[in-house]
Image: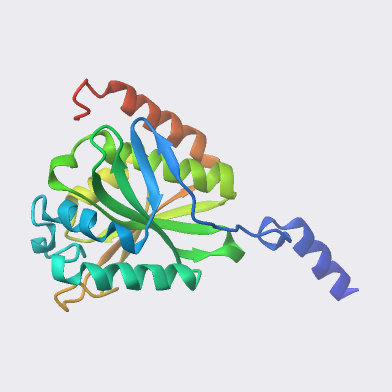
Length: 221
């Protein structure tokens, strides 16, 4: 009797349903921005994007130096092959240039959960519509195509610009995990955790679409 009751409870509980999210490399496009699956062929374009603002000099981010870009790509693709990440480069279709990179990471199929992160943009594309457009595409793909029940986001405790950007999406702050991870310089960081539930997605999507509608002709905030 007890086993049958447990089986019934599992069948009714959403976290125990048979189907789990399945992620595959795919191209996403919207509003002149294209997310392309990362490949080794993107090396030079990513070096150029990271050199716009010398992003590797920001101590609270993990943007690779030009000399480290090959290893960065190799490691990212290995994590993807292992099912832990899904990696894209960000291309501005108007100019044709690669202007950054982003990923799904910490993928947990049994919980229908992914996180969005490892995101960076060339300095000239920061504080533009690029980030909002990318987040709209990634969240829409996660909730409406893959079937995620929750999408997480995280950032360094000292990356205040990133925290403001995540909160502007409509994500809820789950809390701060102290001494949770290493920066590229070897120092320990506090990690600020956020999440968006599937039930919250319609309002978050409406917020992102309204924000994009308010951008002026230059695409800047």
